[in-house]
Image (cartoon, rainbow, N blue to C red):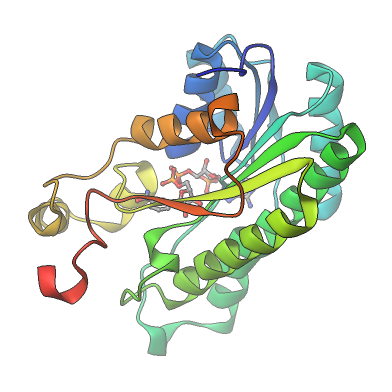
Length: 250
Ligand code: NDP
C-alpha cells in the first residue's frame, strides 16, 4: 500500500485477533505501530511475537483518562499518530430477554463509549496536525439483525452512525471509515462457538468459511493508505457474501 511507511499507527484491542493481525500488517507496511489493550498478558505476548512494535500500552478504552494518557504516550513514542484503528470490542452471547442491566452497560461501555473516547482523542490530535485517518471496527451485526446479540448489534450500528457523523465534521483533514467484518475466526469467536456451530455457519456463507483476521487487516491497510485518499464516511463489509442475499440465501 502507498503512503504507510513510517506512519504512526495506534491499534486498540491489538493484543488479540483482528487487532493483532492488523498490528502485524502495518509493521509489514513499514509503519510504526503501538498496540493498546487492557490485557497485560496479551500485551506481553504480542510484544514478544511482534518485536518491531514501538510499544504495547495497557489501557482500558472505557476510561477516558487512561485513553488520553495512552494516546500521549503513543504520540511521544511515534512523533504523532497518523492512523487510529479503533478496534477493541467485546461480545456476550445471550438472549434479549436475559440481558441484564450490567451486561448492557458493559457491552456499551467498551463497544460504543470506548470507541467514542478513542475516536475523539484521536480526532483532536489529528485536527491539530491537519491530517489523519480513523478506522472503526463495526460488524455486519450493525447492519442486519442477529439473534442473541441485541446489545452488541446496537453498539455496532452506533459505531456505523458515529463513523458517518465524524467523517462529515472532520473532513477534509481527517478521513473516517468503518470496517464491518462478518464471521472472523478469532479468540472472541472461538469463545462463543462450538466446532459444530462454526461448521454450521461455514455452510451458510457463500464463500464457505470464516474470514481470517489477516483479511480484515488487509482492508484496514488499504483504507489507511494513500490509495484510499478519496474514501471517507463509509462502511466496508468483509463478509464472504453473507449479506448479499439476505433471507433468500439462507
Ligand atoms: P478478540 O477478543 O480476539 O480481541 C479483542 C481485544 O480487545 C482483546 O485483547 C481484548 O482484551 C481487548 N479489549 C476488550 N475490551 C477492552 C477494553 N475495554 N480496553 C482495551 N482493550 C479491550 O476480538 P476480535 O479480534 O474478534 O474482535 C476485534 C473487533 O472486531 C471487535 O470490535 C469485534 O466486535 C469486531 N468484530 C469481530 C468479529 C469476529 O467474528 N471475530 C466480527 C465482526 C466484528 P480481553 O481479552 O481482556 O477482552
